[in-house]
Image (cartoon, rainbow, N blue to C red; front, side, top):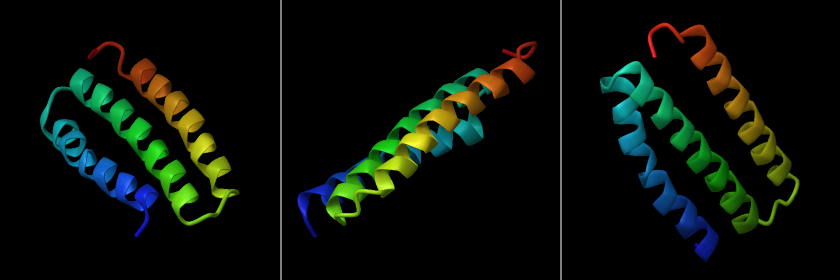
Length: 83
């Protein structure tokens, strides 16, 4: 296990509180936790790409980051009355 895989593991532990907030909190707080989780996940994917020395997988992480932002904006637009 190299340092990149260790970083991905530590960041993965940060997803647990985001999951709990998404499941138990209000809609606005859940949306914020969803954005934090998407940032953590794209960072984890970049760290794993470096750790496993698979450079093409960075494209997947960057695509995920862009699509998660667009998805959160669409989610906020659909539920704007509740926010």
